[in-house]
Every structure is written in structure tokens, then in C-alpha cells.
Image (cartoon, rainbow, N blue to C red):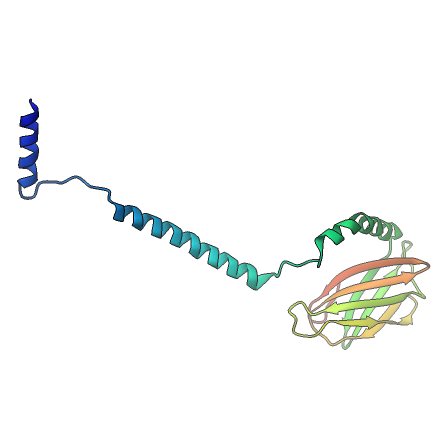
Length: 174
């Protein structure tokens, strides 16, 4: 077949009613693909950013560089606290928070200075600092409304400092 014959057949196929024409990928197709792709990317980014902002602010410390300078000393303090072997039971009895502290031998730790910082995890009530009074040897009490609280307890006795964190869920402790 010659070129003329092929060209003539091609013209006839174009003029024939119902003849199948080949798909042409145009600039409009590319524009549609780009708009849909970037629309999906932007929509996912907006949803993820909204979740990130509404769930956790992300700030654990005010200045991460300064915190990094104290990291090793914090590890040393944690090891010293662990080596003490002290333990605490934290319970809420009505409108009182009760902290029972025992030493490494399982005996009540009397004569300690016990303080706590309590935070309502959902921010419904203001954070507060509590100072405990010794009710009996090793058992310390402070007033606290019933509810869900995160309790950061600080115990100082015999020249040592020990800290623990506990969650109270509606009047029960750990």
C-alpha cells in the first residue's frame, strides 16, 4: 500500500458515520487530573491539621533546648527514686485524697512531707496544689472534690525525695 492509499482510507474512516475515533488526551484532561489530585491532598491535610490542633497542643516543655540540658540529671533523679524502693497507694475517700506511703521494707513511712499537684484531665476544674497532713503513720490526707484527676505526688522524708503520678477516675485510685 502506498501513502496515498493509507491517507485515503483514513479520510474515509473519519467521514463514515459511527466510525470509531481514537481517544485524544487533551490539556483539559490533564487539568482535571491535577485539580482532583491536589484537591484530595489539600483536603486530607486540612482534616489532619484539624485533628492535630483539636486533640493535643504538642507542648510538653516550654523550651526543649533547656529541657535537654537537664535530661541526664532527671534520669539520675529517677534512678535515685527507684533505688529508694518506696511505694504509694493513692485513693479518694469522699472529699478527701488519701496517700499511703511505704518504704522499701513495706513499713509505713511516717513523718514525711507530702504534697501534690492535681489536674483535671479535661480542664473542667482548675489545677490545684495540695498539702497533706499525717492522719496516722504513713497515711496522709488532703481535701479534694471527687472526680477524675491526675495526681502528681511529691514525698520528702529522711533527706530523700520521691515522686509518683496516678490517675483517679471518679473516686477510685491506684
